[in-house]
Structures are given as structure tokens and as C-alpha cells.
Amino acid sequence: MFAVARGGRTFLGASPERLVSLRNGAVSAHGLAGSIGRGATPEEDARLGAQLLASAKDLAEHEIVVRTIRENLADICTDLHAPAAPTLLKLRNVQHLFTPISSTIVAGRTIFDLIERLHPTPAVGGRPREQALDWIREHEQLDRGWYAGPVGWLDAGGDGEFAVALRSALTEGNQAVLFAGCGIVADSDPAREYQESQIKLRAMLGALRHE
Image (cartoon, rainbow, N blue to C red):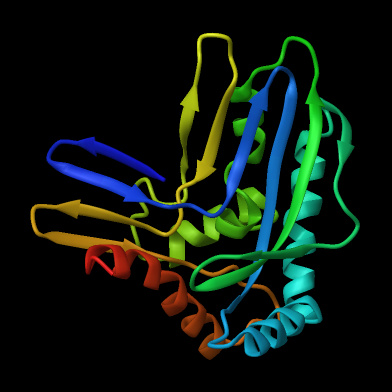
């Protein structure tokens, strides 16, 4: 969870996605892409999870993210490891395809080098990165501000942890602007992506309603 206050406004949220952490040379990142809602019963929840794990569209979206993380870390990390297939990360309102990625940073590199290579992830910035970011700037019609940026901490020894600032809100006085998004690939269905964004907004809406 995070909250950053500045100039009478507060940006806060609870991110499901670790951008990167560094502890005693050990690097950890999360590949997180592909989403579906939670079920009302254990049986429905298991069915939805199995549906996500079998979805060609979501698996392709997830593979793009994992492959990009591995490529971007390759020149500053050694011993890169990621499971061959994703598992499920189950949150209160949504479940995601999840792949943990671990490695060891090379001597002379810092957590800022890791952040520079990993931000923005394909899930929020597209791939190939520069062309996708140019398209987003031209078409998105939204000033993201701090949304989807890296937020975290580091200590005097250079260790730290940063998350992708998702499932978030910008509050000022008694007003709040909520943010949620979806990773769009060739087989994305607009209606399903819109529904997914509504599911992702529930966590912050629930917090604002004290649920």
C-alpha cells in the first residue's frame, strides 16, 4: 500500500504488482498480466481461475510481459529464473496470471538501473516501448500523473522495493479520481476489457466507502 501527499492532494492505492525489489544483491520482479474476476463460490472461483489459465489471449498477454522483463534485465543481472508457466494470484476482487522472476544484480549496478529498464512495463506502457508510448501520448487523452509509475522505498545501503502504482486514486478535499486499466492485445474484446476495469476499481471504491 502507498500514499504520497503533495500540494493538498494525496495519491494512494494498493498495488498488486511488484516492479522490482533488491535485497543484498537478489533481484525480484513480478510478471502480472491477464485478469478475470473472482467467483461467488469456491467452485465458481476455481472455474474462473481455470478459464484464465487456459485463455490463449491472456497467456499471450502474460508471455509478452514476462519475456520483456527477462530481456530488460539480461544485461545487468545474472542467474535469471522464471517458472515455465504462470500461476494464479488471487486478490479480493480479481485474479491474475502471475510469474515471479528472480535474478542477481551485477556488481556496480543499482536499483535505479533496474527501475530504468523495467518501467514502464508492457502492461502499462506497451511493446515495443517507444512506439507504444508515442501512440499512448497521442490517443489516450488522459494525464496519468503518478498513475502506473514506480512507487517505493530504498535504504542507505541501496536495497529497496518499488511497485507499479495501480489500483489507485488521487484525492483532494472530498473528491477522488480513481484509476484502473487493462492490457490490450490483438485479441482483446472491448466489452470484456471494460468489465475488467470495473472489477479493478472495486478495491478503491470499497475503501472510499469504508467497506
